[in-house]
Image 1 (cartoon, one colour):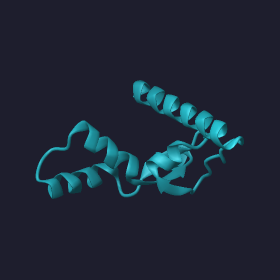
Image 2 (image 1 turned 30 degrees about the vertical axis):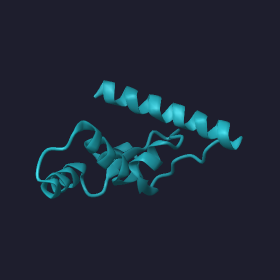
Image 3 (image 1 turned 90 degrees about the vertical axis):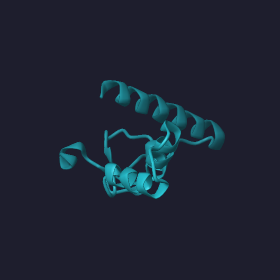
Length: 96
């Protein structure tokens, strides 16, 4: 879990810095209740430590995609599904 968190933080920080460099202004912070793709939301600054929750649960989505494909997904395919799936930003205490 710690390793996953560390990876997310690296991606988050690098995408925020890149956006500032390209636009010349900081990205808008992630806000509670904001909905979008996991990729879009995870790229925003998150000073309130909001948690991204997949809608519906990512395991249900992956199960459906596997069924449609008729087999297992490659790691790259699974990552693409995870990044494009809809998520909502929520405070950590509400997720639990």
